[in-house]
Image 1 (cartoon, rainbow over the protein chains, first blue to last red):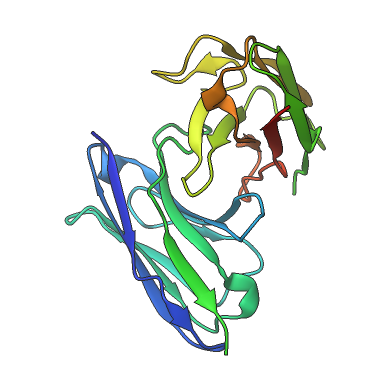
Image 2 (image 1 turned 120 degrees about the vertical axis):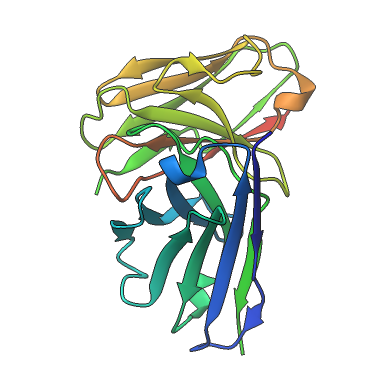
Length: 119
Length: 108
């Protein structure tokens, strides 16, 4: 059974930092591209960041590039998202999701972790 | 970036109705189009991948079609558990991998 357990979400002040973790099991984590996707209240999901299976290649949506850093630990099947310089526009539920097939969908989603940025 | 536009944004339907949701891409995306279902307080769930392939465990009343720029999701006979929000998403060009704005299916 695939399990994706996100953690690390919190209420943080503007300009603050958080690190999100995603513990994965039940699929070939080290062979899968991994993604962070966020969903602001009442809005559609928004892809945020991707990392290749080896971790060598990363991608970011323009609005977070330079502030967020995605990384992974294949020995512990864990995905990370370091978020710095948070703004109110980053308020959302953050999900981790694999893409097990190149060009394919986001196969599985965790329950998400809530990030709220407010003073 | 590729823009994904769904129509309608919301619809009201009765149990047993046939429902069709459209999704249009701003440029051709081959068949790299996927559909997700989301219920309140839950994460999105993959329903259909690559335009027309049913994910394991998804009821056969769901079907998808299309290629290029125009796609559709059809529910042949709406059931009570199908009331939810549906999103399309493209994976042909990206990142970014973009989602439609969603279609909320409500009870009439």
